[in-house]
View: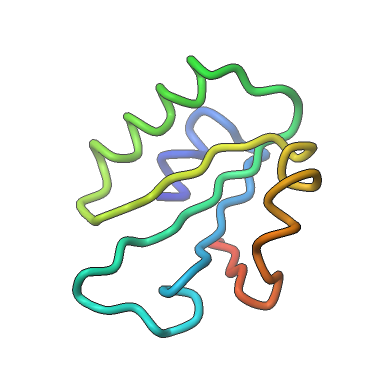
Length: 88
């Protein structure tokens, strides 16, 4: 997944969070993935990136693509940083 994202955004940070990161996932769980990109992100670029990742990764993924600013303003409030695992 990181490879797919890095093809278009070399400075991207990719994280897993939610039940997969906590170790409480079940067979019915999806994998929550957060992609944090520097600068502004338009909705078309985010949609293209999501589509490409979903086509190449054969897993049930809930993909969130946000800017660094949007992460700091919104996501950081709701995701416990201890449960945010960076994909290297």
